[in-house]
Length: 310
Ligand code: ADP
Ligand code: MG
Image (cartoon, rainbow, N blue to C red):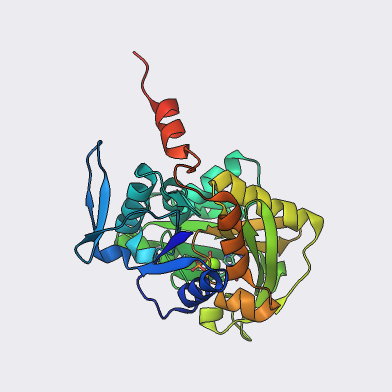
């Protein structure tokens, strides 16, 4: 097969591992910097160009779109879909997962356990917003933050109020969330591939830190999920329409709750912690399922469903 990895940097661990895993299995692997792609959008011959040449004959693409590049990155993935190229994750699903609020609304619709979460535009009724999630302590999050940056624990009502006012004063979109104290600064990363959890790790925040992100000094170890955790992770990935997803759960008093669903989950942390060849499993999945024209057709189906009837 001929597979493109859409990534800004060929030397990143995840990109490197996917390429190696593909080459080991005899596939032709190419790292394509999606920011340098340009597109010809016509209905008879849609094309993508890179370094002055058309990207042709790909059987599959693996998008590794950076959080700050969602707009252009998903446009490139969408163009591959229009050309009939199979993508591990489709553009729609990637866009959906990138907005924490949209993600939580979709999960809530499917009845998946979540921390109680509030969202507001105006700050006139901060008290009401704080009450929605049961008062302080509570967690305040920037809608499009990653790696723990933009996630704040407000221990008191006063702290919560001033942080919310400060963020809103900067016109930043935030959500307010019940603080799951019993999680003890740990979360579970469940790596889902095509409806199965193929690897899972527990991340524990550094001493005195409630955020478990590895980028914030958290430590990871392999973990055996309970059947409920496993099925929650699978349902969350499915609700988002993601074949490859990093589903983050917190262990709460009322069962597992989903914090977020990542559409380009990193491979370094999970492969190192578990010793599982996650990159290899992704390539094996493509080997079995990808072929030109085998996109799930989600793009077309959604368009049909959403079409206005006259
Ligand atoms: P990011 O996208 O920046 O990783 P997250 O929503 O995953 O943001 O939050 C970062 C970390 O903060 C989580 O991994 C978790 O350890 C902690 N955290 C986030 N929300 C809560 C919450 N409601 N209760 C307890 N801990 C939380
Ligand atoms: Mg996170």
